[in-house]
Image (tube, rainbow, N blue to C red; front, top):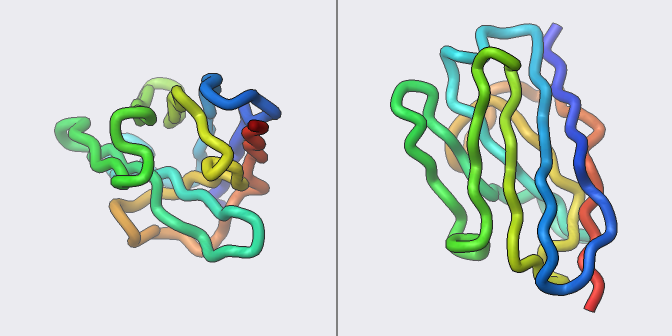
Length: 119
């Protein structure tokens, strides 16, 4: 059974930082690319960042490039999202899933973790 458990969100002021974690299970974590997505209030889910399983190269959405970094720990089946210089427009529920770019592999999602950036 595929499962994602996101954590690390919270309320932060403009310019602050947060580190999100996503623990995955139910599939071969080290064999797939992993991604972060977010859903701002009243909007569709959107791609944030991906990390490739083979070479750990990353793909970052233009809206967060230079501020967000994705990493992974295959020994812990966990993917991370380091978010710096946060802006109010980063306010969203953040999710992870296997996959790359705008394509996710599994239709089962975790509960997500809420990130709220105040100005």
